[in-house]
Image (cartoon, rainbow, N blue to C red; front, side, top):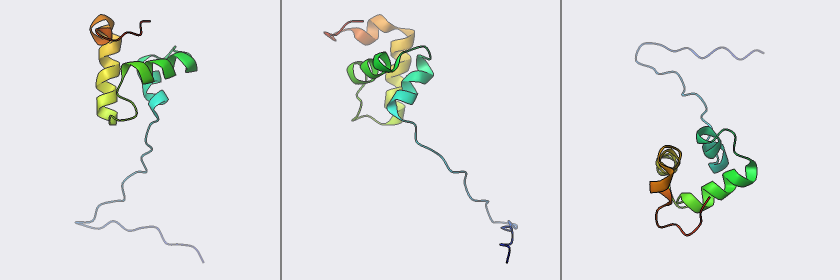
Amino acid sequence: MAIPPRIVGPGLMPPPPVLRRLTGLELVRQYFPFATPDFAEFLLWEYTAFPFDDEQGLRRSLALLRDDPEQAMAGNPNTL
């Protein structure tokens, strides 16, 4: 027996799409697409608050590192 399609009527919302959480390395690759896996891991661990920050915080850190690396690296003893 075939399962009937879900009917969406007035006032009913369709089910939300299945969203997949990005990993930290996938986030780094969005901002630094040519980074090697080792370099992406280095950036993630040394220049962000990973694993303690949420996705938005990681995005802010990575955007700052991409757009203004000198400011992002200020005070960090690890240098690129």
